[in-house]
Image 1 (cartoon, each protein chain N blue to C red):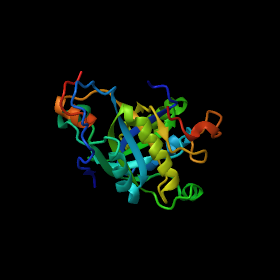
Image 2: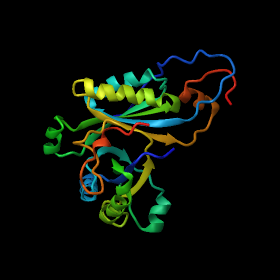
Image 3: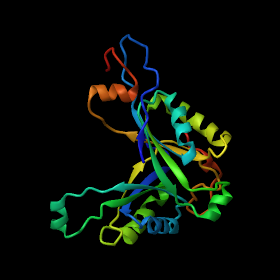
Length: 124
Length: 134
């Protein structure tokens, strides 16, 4: 079922930190992402319990990456915009089954940093 | 900012004993904002009864955008619930449209939908009405 080589990383950060998300992700090989705006809703009790104030305005960054880059990018995001940073970010990944629309120029680089010819489409 | 497309896809006419679709996926289609409605309309032809168009921003820098022949970073993210048996057709159509529609370049990917609740909602999402769903 999940035999494609891509995953989508969703990173939710405070407004204004999407640039930091992309900077951290790019260093690990990601090429581009898409930013959506949203509003966070946190449990007020949990906020006081953990001593963190939740800023309601959020940015949701979606980054399509090769599976092999996923762990490195998640670690980089944790360091750059994790919950204990001003970005107060959380990140998670979802499996991607099929992809269309990637080209060699905007393709996700392989481990050696070079775009692969077959990155054009991984449709099953 | 976000809008929900109304149900327009034809309801399945098969009234005999029906089997449940193999499964459903969430299809994310990211295109230039101006083309959001066009791609949403195209996807409705694949028995998509529910889709939402979200406004978004691309993160590619200007140099990378010009390399790709793109000029603006205003994007539309179309979130569609699609039956798994229609995925290949829908993606094939999108691949062609990404190449042939002017300023229609984009990407699309599917993520498995693992569960939902409610028969009516399931029938609505899978575009199956009546009969007995197994």
